Length: 87
Image (cartoon, rainbow, N blue to C red; front, top):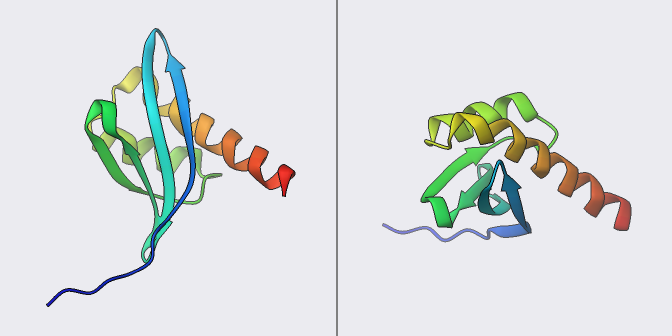
């Protein structure tokens, strides 16, 4: 059995962390939020963009390098805040 649900990409950012480049796609789906970093083969469930600690932990569990996970979670938070200000 297959069920179909709507998913939404909220934003896409290009993040440079310590000389490495990350294409970060952040969105929302039926169970919450998600993050994909296709150029690193990373994909994981996420929390609200403001939850830097939890999102950092999820990125680390998905094998995101230790030196960049917190920075990426912070960039996600900043991108979400910027989009809210524009609306």
